Length: 255
Image (cartoon, rainbow, N blue to C red; front, side, top):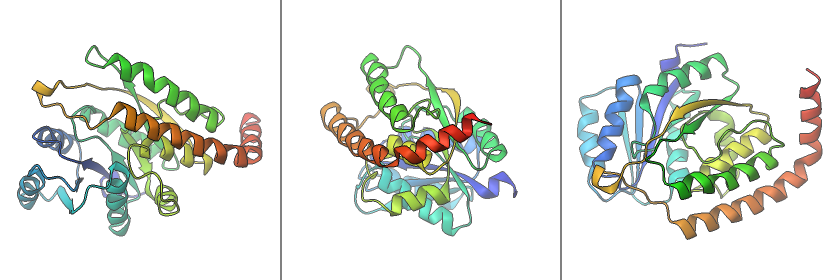
């Protein structure tokens, strides 16, 4: 196995995150190199600023996409470039500062010890977490665990993760879905279907108020409708795969 800093990178998708993006990138660079940022059609000027910073920082790379196509599309863009550059794993983290950059090294070390697995961050919420978001995610988590026969997806929505690039790219390139807010839960479920085991790691999460620079593009009705449609689609796929999944669980229970 090669050095983890030549096989694993931090990938940050961003869309109009504002100045909070600079804090997120600076924190990520404190704990890891390289850090790649994919600006998904941002119009807030952050891409140009980061491009200038990257010119003086060999550990930072910035991609500017001309159109906003969603989080999953931005991650797909970054994963393709990472594969072409020889990386095997990517840690994804949100651009809004919610994810704890101090946990990056621990997640990468766990991934290095278990390269066949995906490392799933499980949020440790503090008082800043909106109750609606904390309670509401239990529904998606319940569906994700049913769709994977409870193999151990600790949190289906938390986007702070380390993915093995090859199987995730094969999934993404084989579907037209997973391009927006549906990316995180569908990636976890479909990787489980492919036999990629999840390993959960609790990590702190913080929600910033608008006056603190917090930015959220989550739209309650739109995105929950997207999740409902996604789980309907996944449930159909689950039923088709149920015999295989049951056999796999039976074999694993014997070991």
